[in-house]
Image (cartoon, rainbow over all chains, first blue to last red; front, side, top):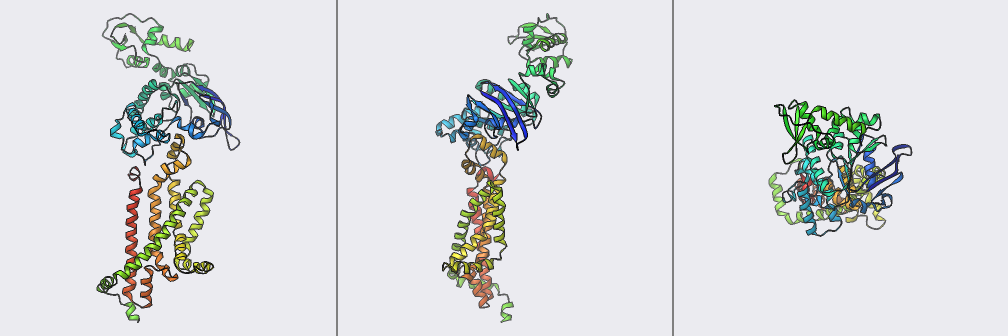
Length: 323
Length: 227
């Protein structure tokens, strides 16, 4: 758990970078801090592992004040991933990934097993990469190693500073999905900085939207999109916020909330799996691929059909009375 | 006499000189290597830590680099000359000690400056990652900063060595021996063959030293930094 307690950061005696920040990242939660550049999100992240000092207030990491912890020991217990991956060019991939276990004095066998396991986890073949050097890897591969390094000593908490920001869109999407898979399995407590609202909507359990060092809204993605707390939030999440929020609901959510229409056999219909998002459903209809979509579960059993009207009805309901 | 000076010795004279005085030249070369080698080792021991210190203390950096630059601007002949009265106070006015001190002072600038530049230029993201991961300042220095700064630091040491081998020829004037002795004797005897032989020996030694240090650099530079 990371608990921000009235955290304030003042530069040069008068420039307030962070003002009275109060929020909590619960265990196993992935919280994304979002905001325009200069909003203080990276500063706040770096205050957790004390790369930036705290002027006032405190951050409690699993119940311990970071201000009064041993910095070195604390940092070894926090996974840290940065945008430029920060792999050390002088070390091979195994030494890079295992640097923290090495500092902690793990034995050779334990480190090797851990390396093999982590590389499989991030989707790289351990033996193929072990002896290679960072510059021989592509950006995406380097960042996978960066994630493996952060996970090496199995820290309960991870700090990630725009980890996928420097990658091209295709690789980025890929890594985001893989990382979500990893997170589902490992359930780390993660504080993540991003400037990309789509990334936040896709990955976060909660989003913290900052502006000028102040918290604008701290909420689940769906709530932030459908119920922005103020005009800044509404503007930041974008005009298409409702459309974005569609990716957070599955067809099943709609089926559970409303009664599906009966299936009518017509040439203008297509099947859709109930696990797919409403955004996919809406796209299919708007692309003129079909007028109605027949909802199927994993076994192929038809449960009914949805149309644009029904989605609209669902949206209305979610936005008006939601969360 | 003037005629003799002007005439360039034929190459056969030179070869003849080298073959018949081989052990003599070798002895002078060995003295030269000992003198410069000792000076460079001391220079590294002083200069590299100073360069590292400069990279963490920018205020000290400008002062230290300034002093090292001034050392470099003193004509080498004068620097050796100055050593005589100063070290005469402890009865060491001539010989190896003043020569080594002069050479050490002379080689500080390339070593300090290159070390300072190399460490300051290590990618700030690497430093950030090293800190964030939980490396202590000392671990960061020897696990990350020094290995990545190695090529540039070694380049500074190579420059200093080649420079010192050349400047070291003057050390003979304050009684420290070395290949300068052959050149100096050549001048005194107006023997062009000797002057040329001494000069060639100094140049060859400098080339060999540079090659040797490249080899060492190659061994000490981590594979991933070479590219």
